Image (cartoon, rainbow, N blue to C red):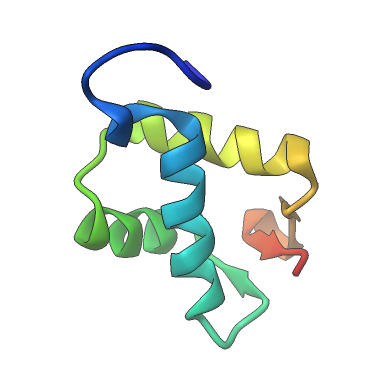
Length: 77
């Protein structure tokens, strides 16, 4: 869910997107492997692979990430 009224805001895409942007911002490389990024993200915020994929979709819709070479995730900021 993008925003809801639950008691766990750390499961909202706005929050998770912010955490993932922070993880990407701390990487010097413009591109990173899907599973490597998941591992880094999971160290900062424990998350399921499904929520991780939804968060990446959210950032893609916002234009903050795109598909890079050989299926890697490319940051656009």
